[in-house]
Amino acid sequence: MENFTNDTIDTNHLPKFEEVTFTALHPKYFKVVLINLLIVISILILVPSLVSVLKPELFSGRIWLILGILLPIISTLIIVFSIIGFKKKGFAFRNHDVLFRHGIIATNTIVIPYNRVQHVALHEGLVSRYFGLAKIEIFTAGGSSSDIEIPGIEKEQAENIKQLLMGKIQKQL
Image 1 (cartoon, rainbow, N blue to C red):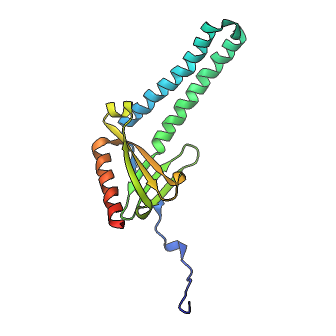
Image 2: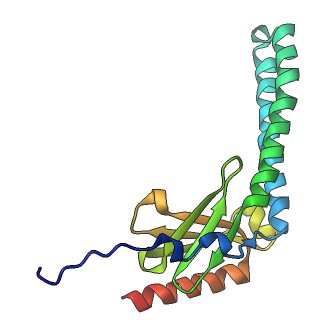
Image 3: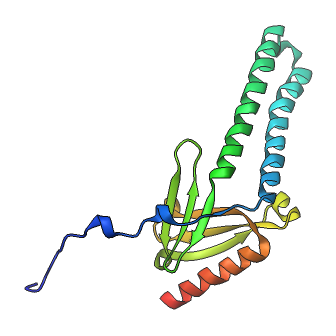
């Protein structure tokens, strides 16, 4: 313990992740987002309609008026926030870490060093598969709160990214 040092780090000379050029999600992924939104909005409309057919006594004219006002407002907000969220998402791979940016009101950037990556998975949803897209899931040693999912990547590129990350994991072992 005689040689122990604890020097101060000059934070002005640390690498800045803000200067990294992020890769945007594939433009086809926006179609996936819109199709998923269409499904959600359809459910928002169909559920009250089915309930009103099965139990007409539950739905008076006032409830239909409220639903007629709220559903378009909620649908518009969901669409607007989804568009903003799509535009803000991005990812980057550097020599020692992976970065993922997302958020609607506040922008969050997650930086995961490769030495914390434990597992990498490739996931294709039904709609995403139709458009040739996949999602990379990166699982870390820090638990589920530090895991990331990067959607909207072309399948071939996603497979290359998975191989890159698996190679980084193998070098760590």
